[in-house]
Image: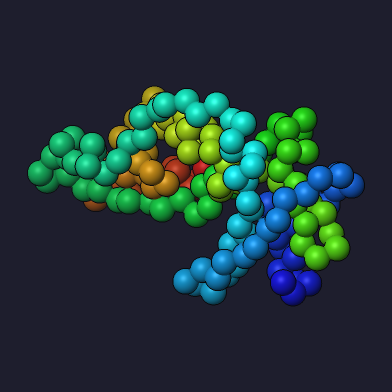
Length: 168
């Protein structure tokens, strides 16, 4: 990785640390040209308790769609990276890039518990938005905003972008 990529990477996902253990990391080129970090968490995942949960899918939302309603699908970019990790747990998510050692400060993709944590967080945010009158359905890493008119959906999207808690 180039120095500029390392700096962006370390600032957004992880911070330098002086930890003892590290996991191997690789990067994958994304379709839009950016690099996505890949952290090998296989050894750690073996020790995690995998709790069952229900992840909403688009197929489960379709029956609630009404003819004549307006809809907007919003794609969350890097959704797992929005949840900051408890500082005491970060030491378990260390990795190296060249001679530098980092630890994730956010929920990394590849952690066995990440999808459940993400789904639970999304349901809390969705409940908050529904109390504000926004008809919203979270599914996978997207939001589906529903309204009876185009202007209503546009207003709701503006609220989503303006409300810092909604964008967490």
